[in-house]
Amino acid sequence: MQILAVDIASTLVDDATALVTGFGRAFLRFATGPIDRIANACDIAGVLTERRATFRMWRANRGRARHEGRRISLLGRLSPFRSLAHLT
Image 1 (cartoon, one colour):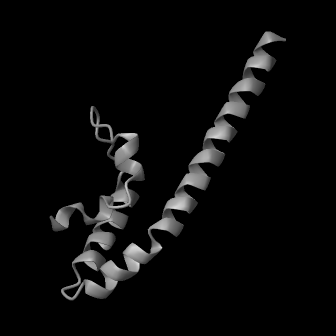
Image 2: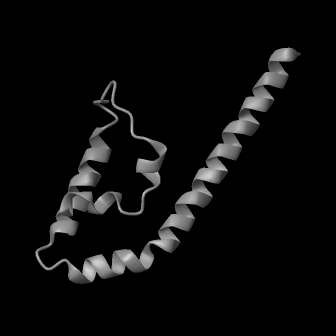
């Protein structure tokens, strides 16, 4: 009986974190929309388009090869400027 209670509690916590993460991503996408439009308008050389394509390929391949010992902080994941870091 105790295992069932623990399973229900952990499922509730997992669902709550997924919900908060989803709302956070939606809010960030909404808040950074104007910044992304300005960046795309100023991207004459196509650097951002190339960067996004590279990121998509990396994300597709990361399931096969995980980087051990390297963790991305929560602030790094939620930063609205994370895709523009290579332009500095």
